[in-house]
Amino acid sequence: MSVLAGLVEQLADLLQPLCGAGSAAAAIVLFTALVRLLVHPLSRAAARGQKARTALQPKIAGLREKHARNPEKLQRAVLDLHAEAKVSPLSGCLPSLLQLPAFFVLYRLFTGSSAGGAGHELLDHHLFSAPLGGRWADALAGGGPVGGAGLVYLALFAVVTAVASFNYRRARRRPLPATGGQDLPGAGVLTKVMPFMSFFTLVTVAVVPLAAALYVITSTTWSAVERVVLAR
Image (cartoon, rainbow, N blue to C red; front, side, top):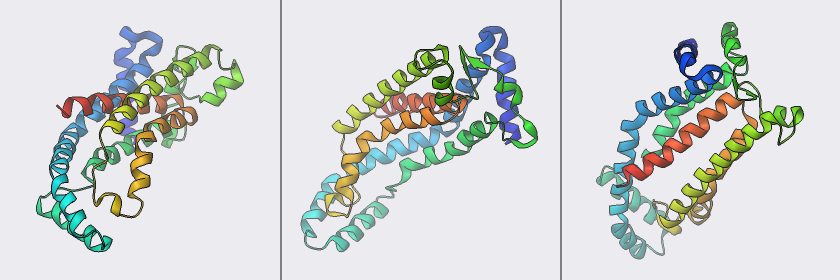
């Protein structure tokens, strides 16, 4: 963890002449971009898997009709179909899972809980009036929702809402890839809930330190743009 923490600190030092007081915030955005570039090959593979799963939908529809009265046999047949086509139903989850270590590094770094006290210098940095180690609750207690720090959070919430709304519209237009269709237990509920998942980012941004929130917002925005590009 200390290696990644040191990388964020070095990026902040390099960006100091260009970004001034916002160098640490800019370093987090750049750090996020580096993480996303590292997992981009996996994202491309996930996009190819998505297209392959979409191509299997006619066959899955045939299996659903054939095994309409036997859900267990339908599930096995669909899994066998994915295995035969060498397509993993869960391949799209891997890029997100690989980003979790970077998120937790930033969380610990900007809560002052990292080993040896690393990150305390970065805790002194701000994004405009909001300290990178603070939370939305601190902003509300300090100056209220329209205080200096509160306005920073309102701007971030606006960005998250715009990205979440964009993802929501895309998810509504494109059905969730089936692993057995609505015949599988819980599939119907999952299909209805998935379009709203992006809005949970608002909760994350509200409760984590601002530094970690910047990572989440940058990564979420990157994901939205990346999906559009890879879908072409």
